[in-house]
Each structure stands twice: as C-alpha cells, then as structure tokens.
Length: 459
Image (cartoon, rainbow, N blue to C red; front, side, top):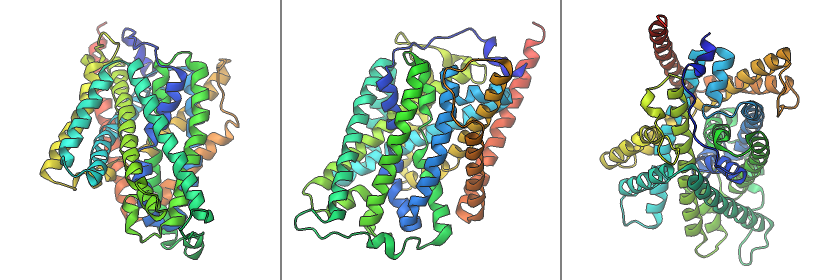
C-alpha cells in the first residue's frame, strides 16, 4: 500500500530533548516575525483599518488548523507532521507533495527573514551593507541549528521571550497613546478607524488577506517539533492552546494600535511599530523597537530553518528525498538537511548584492498562498484520520472539540479565502502560480514513487 511507505525505511532517531516551554515559545517564534513587524504595515496600506477583518478571518482559520494538527501530532509525533498525516490520509504522492511544498515555502521565508532583518538593522546602523549583514545572519543561524536541538530550543526560547515582552510594552504604550494619558502627546483617538474604515472596500480586505495569511504562516511548526519534545502527547496540546491565543492577542492588538495611530496613507507604515512609537514621542523607543524587530525576524529564521531541515529529513526517511539527508551528527542533528535548507538563503544574499532592494519584495510574493494549501491538507487529513480512528476504535490522546463541524468550518473558510483570492487580479496570479507549483511537485513525486515501486518489485 502506498500509504505505508514510511515503514520501508529503517527507523531513525532525532532525539527527544526539547522541553515543553521551548516548544511553546518556538510556535510563537516562528509566527511573530516578518509578517507582524513588516507585513502589518502593508496590510493597513492595502485595506486600511478593515485589515482587522482579514486578521479575524485568518485567525479563526489558524485556530481550527492548529487544533486539527494538535490532535494528529499528539497521536503520532513525527518530524514530517502534516506531510506524514496527508500521506496516511490521502496517499504517498499527496504526503510528499505537501512536504516538499512546505519545505520550499520555508526555504524562501528563511531568505526573506535574513534580508528583512538586515534591512531593518541597516536602517538604524548604516555601516555594513544589507547583503553582508544577511550573510552573517545566515552563517550564525546555520551554526546554531547544527549545535543540537537542546541548544537550539533554549536559544529560541529566550529570543521569543524578548519578542513577547516587547510586544506587550508596545501594546501598553499604544493603549496609553490612544487613551490620551501620555504627557504632551495628543491622542489620535479612533478617528483613523471610524472616519474611513475600509477605504479600498472588499478588494482591499481581499488584498490584505494574503498578507495576513503569510503573517500567520509558520505556526504549524509546533507539530513538526513535537517529534523531538519530551512527553509530546501532553506538550503538544498545551503548546497549541497557548500559542493560538497569544498570537491572536499580539497580532490583532498590535494591528489595532497601528491602524488607530497611523493613517493608511502614512509613510511610517513601512516600519509600523517604530512609526507608532515616534508618534508617542518616546525617546529612543523607535530605535529600540526596530532592534526588537530584527531579533523577531532572526528568531523566526531560526525556527523556520529548524522546521525546513526536519521536513527534509522526514522526506528522505520516507524515500521521498535523497537518503543522504537522513545522516545525523553526533548531536542528533540532520546536518545535511540543514545545509540544503539554508542554501537558498546564501544565494539570496548574493542576489541582494547584485540587485539591491529588489530581492525581498519578490520573495514575499512567492509564499503568500502556499500556507493555505498546507493548512487545507491538515484539515482534510484530520477529517479522514479522525473518522478512521473512530471506525477502528483507536483511542486518541488529544481530540479536537466540535468535530466534525469545526473541521468543516475551517474548510469552508479556506474555500471562501480562495474564492476571494481569485476575485482579485494580484492574488489570482499568485494562486495560479501556487497551483502550477503544486502540480509540478506532484508529478515529480508520482514519477519518483513509480520508479521506486519498480525497483522494489523483485524483492
């Protein structure tokens, strides 16, 4: 049976040294990055204050996706996560296609976050060029990921703590500014929101939706990291519950403050957090938040490099990628999987040197809709696997509440997002490109599976 291809390879072991608190903060670290600190401004520019509707829709969807992933990850913690679940539910080709699609998405995001962090740092310290800073970041975080999951997890934990603390302070300053309690600073009130809530109408909300989807992308990395976590059955449920509500509070709270303080036409939306703090007239705060944004992007880079390398390892383990990617170091790290996952990031630094300020916008355009396909596969897989478990009488350590209604609701929301996306020219091109990429990956995976099947028949 094609759905049992994972069993034809000898079992490999990554280790189980990541702590539950590190798993929780990794989920935050992967999601609170370029999408929030850079993408939130682009969302407000596209839709005005109505971008909040985009965040509510996407936030509801990611909650449902994470609940579905949590159920499957607790029952089967695996570094291939949703790729493995799609394989078990839909077949080998589907699982491999989703795995490769997510890996490619993260490879692009890693490069984008390195360049984004370098650009922000250059804006306040214009000494070392952007390409050189990005190169230094890529070297440093490759080394961190090769050091071992325990060291990586602890590093990511403190990175994420700093981001969370900064966002909490930002929300406090934003609330004080809006309430008019900052001395010598006039409150903008809610006039920016109430006077022109949706300046671009439904089209603006649709355009912003794909910016927001990119922002939430990466949260699913929790299900990947479950395979290397102590007591995954308990840790996954706790991490997912914590990550989901914190992300919603941080994202929606921060975007509300930005939309209330900065008009949709403000040039400050290029760096929205710094723009709000400049309005609050807090000395040095804009520079400080820019540094925090740099840390946020590097934290997300760190987490996404981890996720990409583990997915490459899982694909190789199941025979869907070259076997050399399963080679582990003495620290139980898939070192060659890490190497291939960072390769494009190094290429991007060279492209930035050759084409300054052109690479990052292009990278953002490449990954907007791939998240939707991965999330859709998770919902469909959970719907099938949960019904299968019920039919077979298999006990599940963690169950998604409201099944199957909430899973179906997630698929309906996903369908509506696709419908809205096809209604706008810019997102329509992106969606067609994504589906063309998926078709190409699926054909390659199917061909590979057929070749492997021929090789195995004599056995």
